[in-house]
Amino acid sequence: MNRLLGLAAIAAGVMLLIFGFNAADSLSSEVKEFVSGNPTDKSMWMMIGGGVLVVVGLGLTVLRGKSA
Image (cartoon, rainbow, N blue to C red):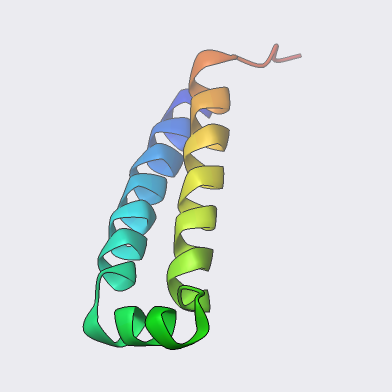
């Protein structure tokens, strides 16, 4: 069960990372980054959330918990 949840978390994390990188490369994000020097919050949160999900998914997949 943990392995299935881990694989689902990895898949969701990779999708969030892809969406985050695409949002960071959008025209509106590049204009905001040019003006303020910072990327948009939406793209940053998607990339952070995707990275966290991938790490959690790897942890669930690789490290199997001992079931009682």
